[in-house]
Length: 207
Image (cartoon, rainbow, N blue to C red; front, side, top):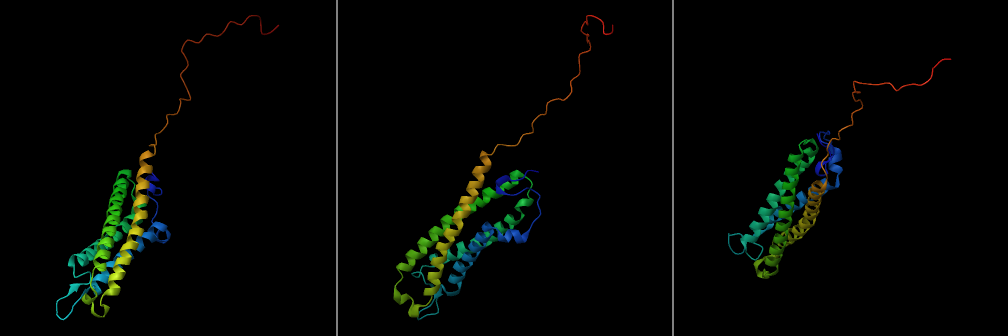
C-alpha cells in the first residue's frame, strides 16, 4: 500500500471521526452544506407569494425559473456535500492510488462546477431581485427570504473556491511527484575464481 497519495495520510490508517471533524477542510465542507440548506430552504418556505389570488408566484420578479434554479442548485449541493464528506472520511482507507485519483478528480470536477453554478445563481437572483417592482411584494412579503438566498449564494461561492484550489493543487502535486522505485542492492558476495595461485615467496619463513 502506498501512503500520502493525493494529499491523504498513509493508506489503511484508522478512521478517527473526532480528528476528521476538526480538520479545516471538513469545517469548510460543513459550511458549504449549511449554506446550501439556507438557499433552497429560504426559497421553498418564503420564496413564493400570492397577491389577490390563490396562485403563487416567485418573489424574484415573478420568474419561476429563478426560484427553480435556486432550489435545484441548493438541493444538489446539499447531497453532493454529504457524498464528499463521506468520501473524505473514508479516503485514508482507500489503498489503491488509482481509486484515490478518481475520487480527487471527481471532487475537483464537482467543486469547480458548483463554484460556477453558484456564481451564475448569485448573478441571476440578484438581477431578478433588482428589477422586481415593489407592488409585486405587498407588505414586503418574501423580501427577507430573497435577500438571504442571494447572500448565501455569494457565501457558497467563497466556500467552494478553496476546495477547487485545494483539489487542483493535490492533482498537480501528485502528477509531478516521481514514483517510488525499489533500488537494487549490490551483491555482498561474489564467487572467487576457481584457479587461485599463491604468490611465490622468496626466502624462508624460519631460520
